[in-house]
Image 1 (cartoon, rainbow, N blue to C red):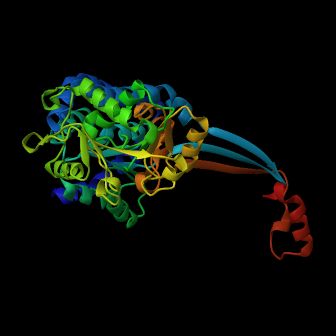
Image 2: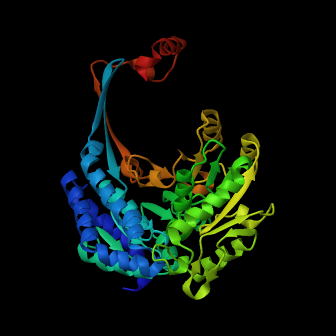
Image 3: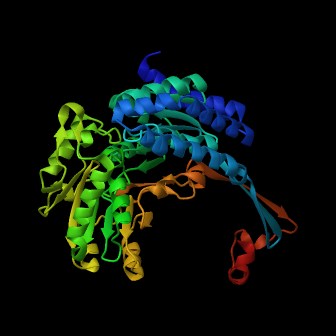
Length: 463
């Protein structure tokens, strides 16, 4: 079968198998999730090697930010899945009858998951965990920009699951376009805002629902009450984790002018403590994923004064942890998501003035603030439209299955993780029944003023 025909046939092939066997039981879903956990553990070292090949990820980061969060998610979902699948029943007395409502969550069918290159294992399998828990069949398209991880993912998953249940399809952007034009029941995409728009546009032609997990310029505000060495260490860690290629990394740091200089000094001290004076030789620091992205991030460095770092090497796709200051208004680094190891640090005088400025993206994926000022924190939380606002920490909230992860506006729509993921990959199916003990003829034509008066008096019992 030609490749295009094979891709187009995948959704129907999975749907037919699903419908012939019926909605998977709780036991079946748990069995599939535990199989996924088993192959993750069995191939742990191979995955960490692949992640290092693609992104230069140190083993600690590879395990903690990719493998561990997947294992924790599987454990959490398996513990709570029975409760989430439970039928919800209610009965209501009406005029002349009793209505019985039974609500259950029903799977969509065959879903397409398009992963991203910055966390190529986690962002391919985290949505799949939710999809399997909800009873779906999956087609996973990992990013071609992380080829070692994508190839290993295909080898491992295709060896563990039949294609009617879960299959990994590798390929370039053309393969992704072909898949998004196929008749899936749901598409889950993680990536850039620009590509997300194209995916949504293609899916709209078939009325296929889409969940988009995009990015944004996550603001991080450090006010005069929030400064501490521990706070700076957290910010530096969150910014330069995975060489800055994290969608929820602090994009730009806004610092109250009264602590501006000492903050810059402490940032430099933390970077040196983490990665040494020669970070290119440090095994705990990653690399930029692609040549094109390398060039884009290097261009950002040139738009301000380099306070720390700034060195880079194209042949190694290395960019040192870099701090830039004194940026010109309108610079692209202030308008575009950086998605790399460059931290602009900008002083501010007044929080209200800062929040009302154009440099704060209200619908970013998340917003961070380090402060002890309750009024300031509340002002920031009220101003931001992000689904998550985090105070005095960065990154950690995204690893919790208790917290929905998703965007709004330019940072995407829809959410997942934990129960939210189960809900996102399923829909409510209602069994409604009416048990009559008397008939009320007044609802039928011809209508009369008498019937209208009765309706107004008894509406809550009739409807």
